[in-house]
Length: 295
Image (tube, rainbow, N blue to C red; front, side, top):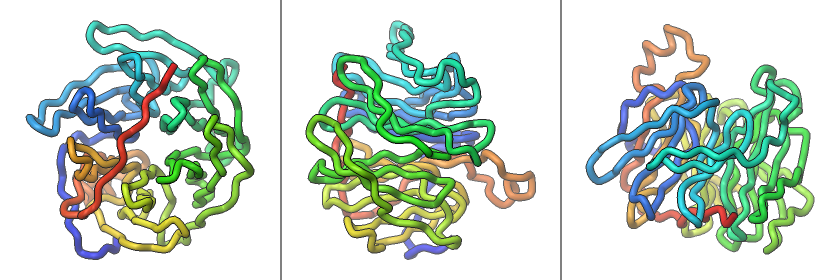
């Protein structure tokens, strides 16, 4: 785990099996995130430290705010609308109804109010069965690309003209031209990680247009400029950071999720904080507000 000396601080020792999908809700003044394997949605108040959690009916890969109120969640068996108080779950669409090995894995809303979401074969990540989908505001679901093994980290550039998307298994971040209506152009390889860098996972873009990436297996997060040049690398006390977002009213608190999934007993002994939620202090940069689903 290499870094530039900046400290990562444990914010919450939740010990998630597969923590993912951090989302700051300015509306609710809470940080949402999920534990995929535990089928659990969490909401943390950064002011009080109060933590709420909800058990969902299937593994959950991501959470997005809905402009009309409530949330949208990506379950193993499809996309659903969710209200937590009072509790109401309404299923919308399942992109793989006849493929029980598939699940949704990561997503972000875009500036046009759509959701970009990826899928993967959860039983055999060697299979390129994953797709990249776009859920439009009219509720229609479109397959916009195929051939992924582990879809991860949608992020949208500062000028809203590029969608970044990762195949973690191939250690590669791709870039797609993004039109105002959500249409994607042909993908290109934006950056391929080497063995020492681990595998790119969740991502976010900051207010200066730089891309932050969680390095699964390498115990760090990195900040890259729009051309893929390394600007900063920060070590964490865990080997499997999964995703990253800016949070707080000023969008100046950098939060990282992590995982215990797949670690041996010996590895867990060396990584007692694995699965925790971390904050990277004193970064001097702000994030961008998360878009909401408009449907």
